Amino acid sequence: MTRPHKANGEEMTKYHSDDYIKFLRSIRPDNMSEYSKQMQRFNVGEDCPVFDGLFEFCQLSTGGSVAGAVKLNKQQTDIAINWAGGLHHAKKSEASGFCYVNDIVLAILELLKYHQRVLYIDIDIHHGDGVEEAFYTTDRVMTVSFHKYGEYFPGTGDLRDIGAGKGKYYAVNYPLRDGIDDESYEAIFKPIMAKVMEMYQPSAVVLQCGADSLSGDRLGCFNLTIKELPYNDYFEYFGPDFKLHISPSNMTNQNTNDYLEKIKQRLFENLRMLPHAPGVQMQAIPEDAVQEDSGDEEDDPDKRIPIRASDKRIACDEEFSDSEDEGQGGRRNAANFKKTKRVKTEEEKDGEEKKDVKEEEKTPEEKMDTRG
Image (cartoon, rainbow, N blue to C red; front, side, top):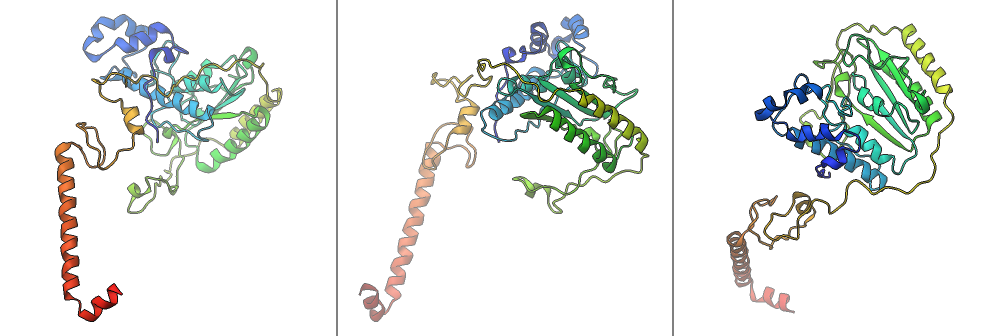
């Protein structure tokens, strides 16, 4: 577990426009009337409402994904998960579909500093339009999206949307109909992704795991399920049955075998048009986005220790401080320290008294045996 840093405006403008990020930093529920024109321009207010802490939310979401990318680049981990990430609809200068800042695009840009080719896979029921748009004309990022298509938000992701310029054939879209089930989904996902991996050979993979593809989702119309629960550090919280099971509904699968096979063959034809594993010229590696000590104000003794710095501290049981931010045991101050020490001293005395009583109860022969 790693606490994400708060991404700053400079990090966000590596993709998003300066005026858009400035707007997100400034807008609040109590000053919306002052920004009516900007709200319309940046598509904020309908399905992307203004709320308290909006910019901080964007900072944390983006910071988590970018920090994960940095850890992957430094080979400090094989897998990084940002539970607050995946805002795949956000555009360069526009919010969309509950998404304000596209943390995925910013994380991929970070990965591209070290990786020649990055593969993006989107299994959200909605098309990953924001990420596809960002990399539509490059061969360094391939985007693959399995999504509901036809009179459904965001209305993009047609089979014929394949990329442009150097990015032609590097956008892969699998449009689906209502009710696709586990068996049908597996029958298309595995062969398509096997071919993509064979032809593209990415060194980094970014997966957007939108849960609205699961059966019963209020916004979704697929019939996918999950079964059982892999063991993890939080396994005990899923008691008493220790299962996370979503059963399929009785909705009709409108994806016929003929339809799925036809789409699959069209995508195979497109993938065969790709040159094997495009490369990139050698160049200097830019500085990492996340610096270990960035943003901390530890030099000022009058300021509270930053949370990220506090997380790294190993607290000694006999150490005391006036901070109320301590974890286990609560506040450790002088009074508590003396109380703890007094309790320990009394316990030690009780132990010595019990030992003396036991010694007196022994017979002379037992005492001789012990001393001998």
